Image (cartoon, rainbow, N blue to C red; front, top):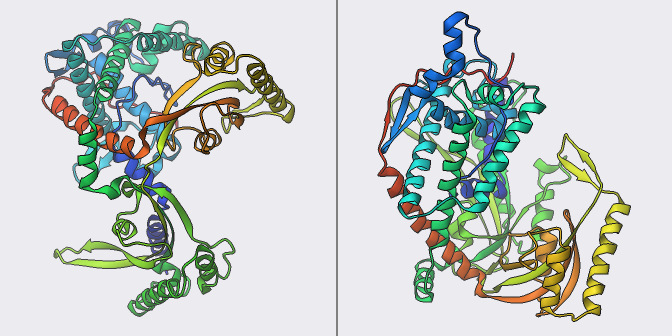
Length: 540
């Protein structure tokens, strides 16, 4: 098999062996996500500009052209090149912050100008074009939402305004840290010649206003019990939780070819048959995870793989399950111990338009259980005693604490709990201690968290919340943040199932509202010649 063929096979196998967690994350990424407000990310490398002399240099450095030349009209707003450059640069920042170390995987060379690299071969668009379209899309969304907010008398919340102040202050700090003589010069390096502190603040304020109004609208969506019950009847399985184990058998694993030899049609057919037989063997007289894993380990292809075993998918909602077998897993007649195997296929089309379906492998499935999620959410109060000291690892971003540092936090938590027990020992007295002593919150909420749902908190904290406590129960829990003195305030009035239904209804209604609002906003591209389309992200 040739090196290129092996590479293709490896890629195909890796794609097919994508874990349930990764598939779930992909689906979550496609779900509704509110606009991410204020995220000031510094570029990996600051912008580099060509040197000009005389009047030309003075005009370029002043930023007059960038601020006076209109790049877009959005509704009734005229957006200058300087203003669009904030959206453009932050679109790049977002990509770099997420994928910077893997930019080459996407075909981006950070040492070359963005407008000299093709992003899409079919359309001929460049990476600069791609980031520009993202910038325009974000700008359209922001201005549409901000206009709607103002039309409804919604103003920038105090905490959002404080976030803007903090972001501007961070610019001052970054300017000093990177050795710039002023914040103004740092902003020009980061966002282009037209950037100023005044216009950057305006950019932060409008994006914060848009994001806050989005959240405000989403939070305003409420539903009656009748509406919840009606929605539940449409497709009840959407709000259940399913637990099962799966194992993927790749046809490639059964290919028998000499090194550097292309597999023949007969070898491919033999590999396909061997994979199917293996899948059938894993579903014969097996009803437990232990037997399933033992059979997997006994497969000849796993002779040198001592860790071969099935993967547990626990508490998955219908939307998170691989669509290939979601209907099998969620069937009404499914019972514990049921097994099956399902082919994973891909379709290719040749130059004559003929389609060919290829079986890449088989998913072998063992059903575990189904939960209707009809348990109540919970309300708790807590007092956080944070760890102090620690050693920070700049490479991993993790702070490690010694046993002595952890013990100090634990003893402090125990002292607080004993103090509460020695006093009135009521929920009100616990709330008062939380306001006074907790390292979490602003000292006004009494350490209260309401309507806690699975997956919301760190595992140890959450495990305590759902351990079947009654009102007034207390305890101490260790998490990565420190020690938490816990007080069980009671069950919520809403079940987890109803919270899922509410979320689904709100997401759908929000999406309809948002789409209509943004699509109803007109955008016209004008003169973008002062946008830095030839930006180079890092030095060669």
